[in-house]
Image (cartoon, rainbow, N blue to C red; front, side, top):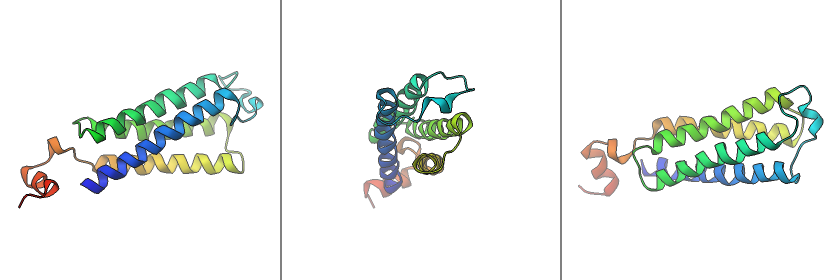
Length: 143
């Protein structure tokens, strides 16, 4: 169970850092696709997608990381929500701007897979507060 928790901490930390950086990149123009890709969508610029990426995806991943570190009872739920947030974000991105060849498609695929993998691991995670006494003794190292 410890390896699963540590893996989820690493995945959520990575997602938090890169989602916030990605949101900043969209806002600042450092990593922004051409605005004409948004033509015909509900977005006139990348402000809303950038805020959703940084705040909803990045923020949920930060929250999940903190709860996992603290071994909180809601760590599993928070981690699952962060995973689903990036899966939904990437799905909407593909629907809005498509999946252009090159780095954009590679990143879409990577983050969708990261979210799916994190969701599967999150579903397998059992917080210490919900483990049986025998499982807790194994984690702590008691005989």
